[in-house]
Amino acid sequence: MTKQLIIATSNDLVRIAPVRIVYISSDGNYSMLVQADGETRMLSFQLGQIEKMIASQLGSEGNIFIRIGKSLIINRSYIYYINMPKQKLVLSDVATFNHTVTASREALKQLKELLEKEAK
Image (tube, rainbow, N blue to C red; front, side, top):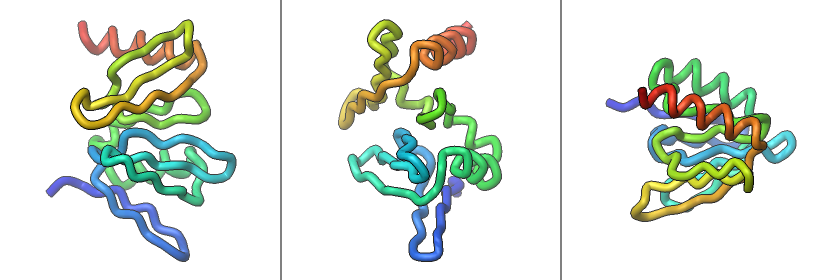
C-alpha cells in the first residue's frame, strides 16, 4: 500500500496520498495545502514542520516533494512550466488542473538546473 501523509492537530487530521498533493504554500505561521482535485486545506504548521513530517512519514517516497525558496513545497511530478523572468511556475497534470505559483528567480533557477541535471 502506498504511504499516506498524516497531518494531525489537536482538532483535526488530514490523511492524504502524496500524489494527491500539488503544492503546499506558506501563509505566515500556517500553510495552505492544494490538492489535485482543487480542494485546499489550511494547516496550522509552518513549512519547515511539514517538511519534517514528509521526511519522517514518507521516507524515500517523500522525494517527490521539493522545497522551493522559503514559501513553497511542490510535487515534482506536476512541474509543467518554469519562466524565470516572470518568476512563474506552472504545476499541472496537463489534463484536469493547472496551478500557477510564483517563486524567486533564484529558486526557479535552482529548480531548472536540478531538473536539467536529472534529465541527463
